[in-house]
Image (cartoon, rainbow, N blue to C red; front, side, top):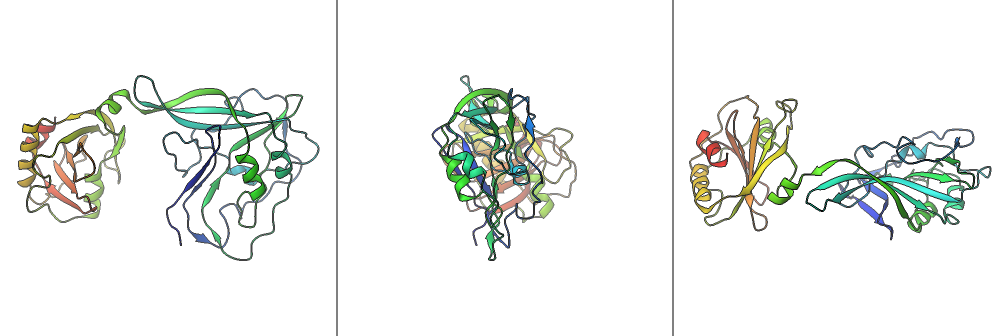
Length: 336
């Protein structure tokens, strides 16, 4: 059984047409239980834009996106009426979103509108019926089709249903036709910032979970033994502020506040402070800020440190072993 794997198909236009998430095994695909709406597809009078059509800018819940990959929310198309011969498409529009780099540094999540003027292969594929339900087992990966609209020569448009195979995923003919579309980007709009220029310059993530709080909820052995960071290691410091709404949760998330590469004398002082850490004290005060220390060059030991609240630390080895310890305000001062 394949677990926690995903794949995405790319085409020349740079769009992800189908993305797969949460792979495993099941008796039927994730769309297999959807009920197809009866009646003809609903025809709208005139296409204006993806934004005007009310495309959900949040994307498909649970879908995995990598930088540069488009997330296309369209699984409701499994339940829409299939395309019939009363509507003659001459073009297709795909609405999605993409992580793009800003010239001055940082990244934005951008909504995209792409258009294909040649749909002679796609239209007959969309007019196919749903295949009979498969008798055997199916993989349980969630196939996310594009948010797709078809336009006719009068400018009218509709959203066609996606014909399913026996496992409740897009039929192979539909996948092939989607992959063959020649797409042109005709519009973009910024949805939100993904990474600030300051975080990019510091080499830090824009958002991080407070893993000290997460691990404290599970319990862990205290930090013991020699310093967790080898002598001479160059360290990058990333500091995150935890909004009040996140504090006290099971996995509080922090937003980038500042970051830098620590001077060598600070690294030595931090190493000594880590070596002196004892067992984590019993404490339930949520942290408003926390720091992440990690090697500048490549993977290695990572250290999370609460800069207020309980002043605990979490040391994560390259092998993934996590141990909690108790620091103090002195370590927070070194990182502040």
